Image (tube, rainbow, N blue to C red; front, side):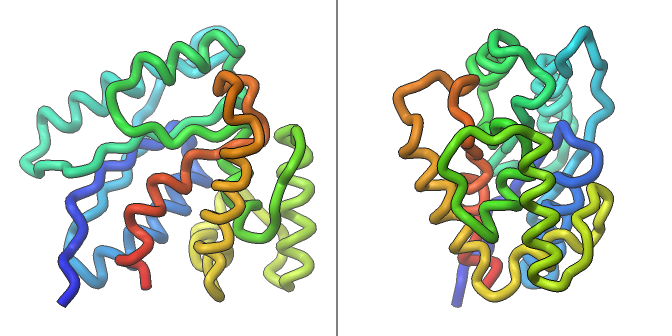
Length: 199
């Protein structure tokens, strides 16, 4: 008999792709184990060029304080894309929770379900590549507001592929600062802890 996962809190900076992906994951786990995963999208102030992650962290703290649930795992999900290097490094350094950051964007994690990325990639190229993979698989175009994104990218053992490809990226630039580590996504660390509950 498998033990249910601890309660997870996943706080996303993104308003569409990330919540859609994690809500897909949430449905699979919650269907099997009851209400174990909460996915929240705070509204966050945009200041200058970068999102203000300090408010993301504060929001997470408030949620934990006001919840009647005890969260065994708390994850904050954000991207490098709109931050300058300094903001990004400081966001990572000042967060006391688990962080699933991606450089350049969360879509890199989606792309990892299909292929290995071994050199610097821009946000636009990630989207182009993702579109190509979607068309190759005959699942239409990639769109940010696709509610079925989780099912589309994770079928046929693709979650394991994504984790393997992310571990490969982790090795690539492992001695650099996060802001210089492109391509890189830490989303696999969050998924790695949950994958046994998804099977």
